[in-house]
Length: 224
Image (cartoon, rainbow, N blue to C red; front, side, top):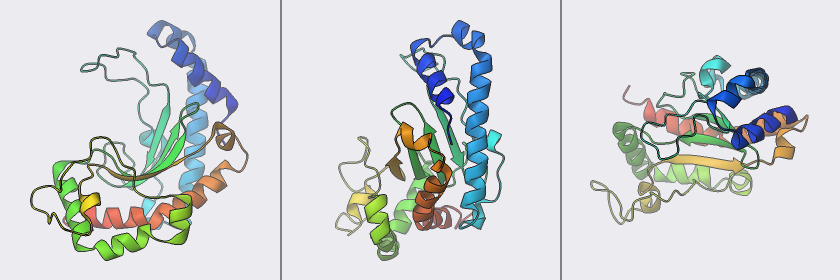
């Protein structure tokens, strides 16, 4: 489970987001980081009970850096106020593969699966597969447990207003073809994150996401 001390560190970081404070509280950061890595290791083991393709990526390599890239941002805060872990077969946040994501941020925690900001060739491959294999794709999203506990793909504000060029504007998959990101997301409360059964409950949600994740990776690796 995520420790309450981890949330306390992130709340304090949000109030004191500067390098001087961060370095003075480096020990607290290291403890919080290790807590997240320990939970990630437990999740990886749990996911392997139903998705052997994940393997056992090193948790440290799955963790997003807490330092922000401020070069092109108006917000010059040097640090993120969350921990993000992406668990995929490549074991890397820079991978094109779909994976299982855990976001730890006070009041904004969530679990997710899929791809965000894919490269153009990956984006085209996913759209093509969804259009060509829409019946299979829709079957995955229409499973009762999926609908009840996961919902549908997340809709972002940057979705296209029209079906992209090269695809049938009258396709039954039209609303999905307009998306630029393909992922599902389930909000999780801080209380749920700090509960002793968090890993078990998170793994059960990832298991429901598994067919979607498998579809995505089959598409992405098809021409590799």
